[in-house]
Image (tube, rainbow, N blue to C red):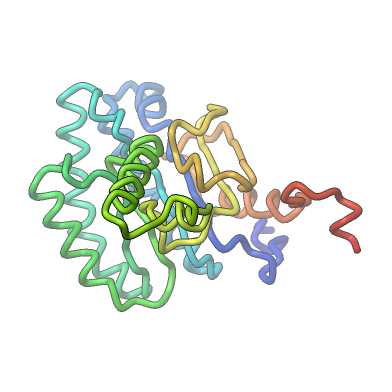
Length: 247
């Protein structure tokens, strides 16, 4: 029996974020190069996006490429960018068929011209879709995002568009790349690593964290369902006591 049957559909997390880790190790175990792992990782992306859409999840953010990943071997980075462009081009019809809207967060200026072009076209072609919001974090890091937000706020104060005394948490969130999205309620990381790796540091303040030893190319819908069931069994207190929540 599928774990899906144990999911309480009325208590789904509105936003799930995933650190897709383990492609390289998966490939190494099979005696292949790292790009082989990334290629098979795309299959997991398809399966998880489909699974999230079928459940009715509203937002799914995937950590696809960090700013630190630019420091990887040149051959691997070039291969990843080529894979990115090819995947986007092929997946747009499927996104539209399933009413999935694509968003991208990160420092797009660092992406190759062909990748920026394909992304811009995909975002435009899916902008009217009303189903799952698929957010791809590309050339993204949370520290980069936070520093940019601070710079923008400082400029607004200098130009008289904002008074420092009026800056609140809500103000700060409006300057983040995720300003249009709710904060994730559940963050999943694959491959057995127990860290957040510069991913949505501000937004994950009250998210439930779920770590699995499954390597990303092996992560499928059943694994997603298990993470959601685990999430639904937790008591989310947001700084309050359990007794307060029962009142």
